[in-house]
Amino acid sequence: MRAALFFAAFFFFTALKPLLASDEQPSLSGPQLEALYASIEQNYINQGKFREEFDPVDAPFDAGILTKNFAYVALHSEGHEINAKTLIEEKPSPIVRWETPLHLWTFGATDDDHRHLDHLSTRISALTGLSINRTRDVQLANVYIMIADQDERRDMEGLIATLGHHHGGPLGNAWPEQVKFPCIARVAIDPASSTLQWAIILVKAELKGAFRRSCLTEEFVQSFGLFNDGADIRPSIFNDDAEFIELTRHDEYLLEILYNRRIRPGMFQKDVVPIVREIAAKLLAEAKTY
Image (tube, rainbow, N blue to C red; front, side):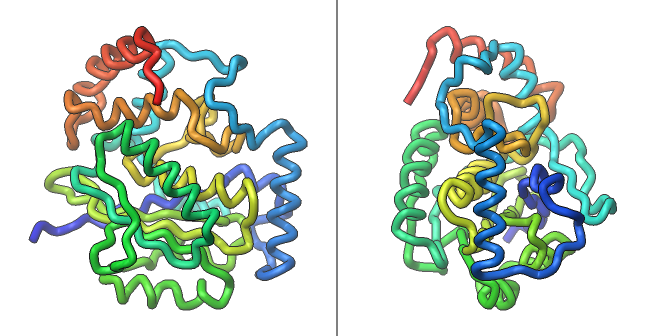
């Protein structure tokens, strides 16, 4: 068996930070935390964020922009800080993606959550060529999506351990209690092949409505190998300002490029970018949609 590299890819809404008093928040749960997240969602909406357009007219892009954005999102790891301390540095990384069928197992998901995940899976499967299905057999799963309340979060590390995976580390330990982490994800990468082996997505149950959907969308899509976010990337969910919370045409193109067979896992930027530029130009010329 090839050894897996545990790649700590935790994604969260850094745009929450200016809406919260400090990094040192009291532990909130249940109705209090639900109310806070609802107020944050409304704040975003009042700022003109949480948009759901597929092809917004105020955010045009061309093949050059698409190529640049792909290089930043797919070929760099995401950096993270807690209390002004850098835990993970952003750095160049090779192409990483799934090369096997995906089997999704969920914990704590509602019927609405399942409908949303099924819709996303159908879209992503069409774009990537991957087989993506939900399973009730946890032993078959390689993608675990867990939505947990405060009590369940305390036991989450133990539950993940029973699945044969490790979930420690500063960010994983911070997720259960820290308000500014509504959702996180972790993936494992085989270092020999640069292919994804499993993904774990964790969402706080106190999230409701559009905020909850946005967490599920961002974490799920990023776990396909688009790991980074950028302040200048739009129209896109790969931007922590939460302007867009559903897949845009731009984001569909990023997924389609990543899974184009001309691009291979393990390739670095200097070899990838010329190919991406050609694919991006072709996609835009054909205006391909699903």
